[in-house]
Image 1: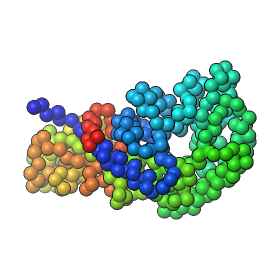
Image 2: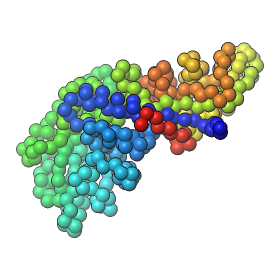
Image 3: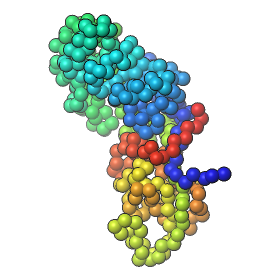
Image 4: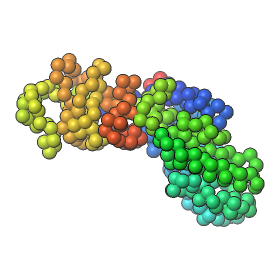
Amino acid sequence: MIIILQPLAEINLENLNHNYFIIQNEVGDSKVMGVIKADAYGHGAVEIATSLSATKIHGFCVALVKEIIELREHGITKPILLLGKFFPIHLELFNANTICTINAFEDIDVIQNYFVKTGNKISAHVKFDTGMGRMGFHYSQAEDVLAKIKQSSGILLEGIYSHFSTAEEVDSTFMELQRSQFDEVIQVSKTQFQNLTYHISNSAGIFTDSQNHYDMVRPGITLYGVTPFGKAHDKLQPIMHFKAPVVLKKKILNGESVGYNQTFFAEKDFEMAVIQAGYGDGIPMELSNSGSVVWNEKKLPIIGKVSMDLITVDCTNIDINVGDHVTLWGSVNHRIEWLSKEVNKNPYTFLTGVTKRVKREYINA
């Protein structure tokens, strides 16, 4: 048997589907559009979409046109909503099941010109900025925007949405302001359109207030069993177990340094394990001389700088051997929420930073 000494991300698809059911139960009759942009937050978009397609999930959200193409080429047939920008060359991809977002007046013109040339109508949602300050029309423009869309014979408007900026924060004042401004847009829209789908909730919004659910929600990180609140949810289960093998054990003597730039000096003799994983695999540099890995329910502190291919841990009096795997994050006793809080790092970047060099293994399919 050949042992491959490389980092491994075990993706538990049973936990994924469990998380979907928890979210669906939380939002009741609201539709769930799972956000699987950025390769499903590092988990593998095709595999995640394939697994979730076996549930009653309504569809998926992505950020890039290339993400739509990848999913369709791999047989994903659920509705897909493009959250990002499109250009005229992309419009042939959109139909009743593949939906674009209108973010600017030029988008309306581009779709109308395409309809004049081809006779093909485009399904769309329109985004309004209620306080995020990025994509979408300012909410105060709702009447003019919707009037122009109403006049466009090439647009099949199916929904209106916005995006929360601060839903994960304890102070809900700004979230509530955004929601009230979104409600203003909804009232304007109902004077011109019927049966639209309204949505504003990201993962944080879903679990903060049921008033945020509207007709549809867009869970991202919570699908993967991680919350943006700095603490774990007692019902969500992490689906990525990121681990890496021990490739060397050695003794370090009092006064010797470990790693680049001598950021760690031993204050006594100790035993060290070298782990085959580094920032080239997605291990954050913030874990240098901070944080820990877990082996056999024991926390082993990371010492020295994280390098491209390796990290080093103190394993004094621990019966760990070459070939054993330590947990970098994701098990029930080493949640990303805790680790990110320890090193003051956004939990999203742990997942999306896992590189292609890390082998993904899908279990409980």
